[in-house]
Length: 198
Image 1 (cartoon, rainbow, N blue to C red):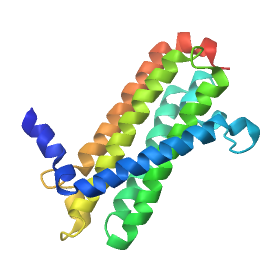
Image 2: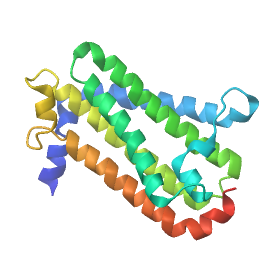
Image 3: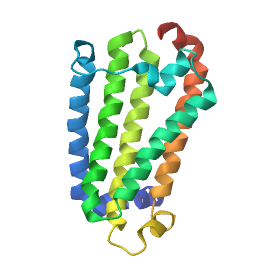
Image 4: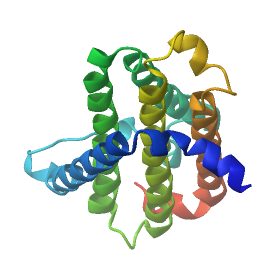
């Protein structure tokens, strides 16, 4: 078991400096996202939670399959952009920007949900959402670090799909699994959470 984790986090050991930069950038993005989410009602930042897949599901505006498809599609697009940006050194800053935007937007959504409905009114959703978002941020940090690790090697895209040489596909599989678990729990708890989401 320890060998599996050691293999998964090998990219962190090889690109420790880059990983630390991503973590620091994520912290800044989270702080900015918290301020933006807290000030959305004053016009500083506006967000329509009606477009968020799981909020639409909890309100009964969409179905289970549609929620899963929307979440995986949006996360998949970010994943694909980050992987593509990892193929060339000059594209890495663009990949970092998309990564930081993902962190920022997820933070804004989380804080906005709390500000609109109140933490204690949607405590189950808030805790579940917090765990889900933090796990996503961690996975995307590993993805970008892994891409930088294999960037200078030959056949970048071929390496990306090679499970023995690269863990990118494993990370995407974990994103899908985390999303499925999140949506299943949301579905199970819907009878309780729906009373608190209007």
